[in-house]
Length: 472
Image (tube, rainbow, N blue to C red; front, side, top):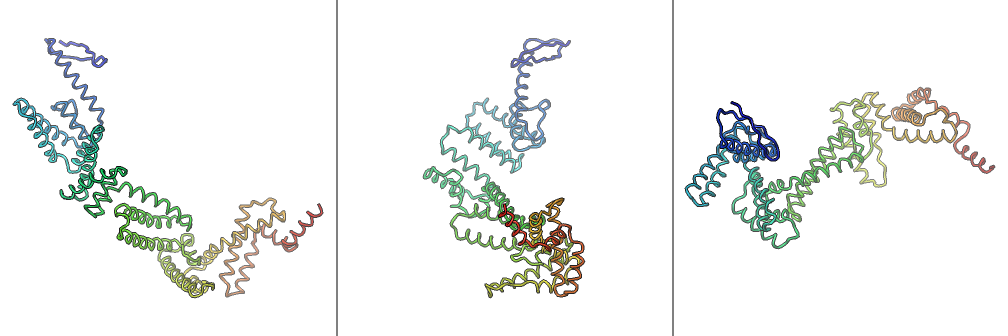
């Protein structure tokens, strides 16, 4: 027969079906006790929410206490299911031995000994990394529970935690560890103003100079400083040199390497040491050379030349990588000649045009060279275009004209005219013919301005304005 009954558990009605032909009150109480234990375990199970796969609570033959212990370890170490089963079997054997010890009236030392043996033998189931994670977790648990404990115990927990972490880098000897412990305890008694971290680093430096330990312990600070300085320096270089996208990537990589190298030296070596100062100087010199080389590849040289302009606009000019490398070599040679001239002639003015005229027309096609000249004179042409627009406004000739479009149009015309003058500087007839053809397609605004200038110069316009004001 099927008998259904209900029991109240933690103010909730739980339906239970119990299949039995004959039953008694004793069996019902037994079932209710089992239900309570399983319910408590399920609450713990879902509270832990371990990230690894866990032993199904409904199919395992292990006690609830064993399940809870295994699931806690699985949560911290991401223990796979097969290892969870092995660990549960391991703990079951341990508890069996402890129960036998209790029944035989053994003293507490035997119980402690059993716990120690089985804690050590966990290494046969957990990997070294998993075991360290679990031991570190237990240490932090103890630290969290020792609020009322002495500062010495807290300091001990802190020291042991860091020493265990350093084992993953390169294990210290027992003698070295004892020296660190003793120095650390002595330092915290002498100076309470500094934190545990500062005292531990000082104690560790008294034992070893191996920078690997300090790089590991300071990795968070190193990453933070490196990232902050990289962002700051890349933005500074981008704004100062007007870097292209590829230039920003190339220069940014070198800046990032320099920033992290600086941070590593700063945190891993003691302040005031001659070696730290020397290494810092060599690092700066090494990365400065790499950054300058990356700037050259982006067309950023100390002096403005046509070579720099060609390299900067290599994509627009469709210059291949091999030609870019050749341009960089010649540009660097030109920079050296320019610098040497300035040393010998501080008041003189170096002229790069003969150098440019000797190489660039041969290295570039005629179309590439003309576009290069237009790019070179674009800034000057733009300034003249703005001046022309101001004069157009002064002469009241801007009706129906859009300022942005007009300035852009005049800039293009001016840069083309300047480029022709530079390109055919040594061939006057060709220059005049080319400029005449260009003037035939002069922008409408420029034609208006030229016609007005033929009648009145800007000085005459100003004089008329002054006379008009005086009449009023």
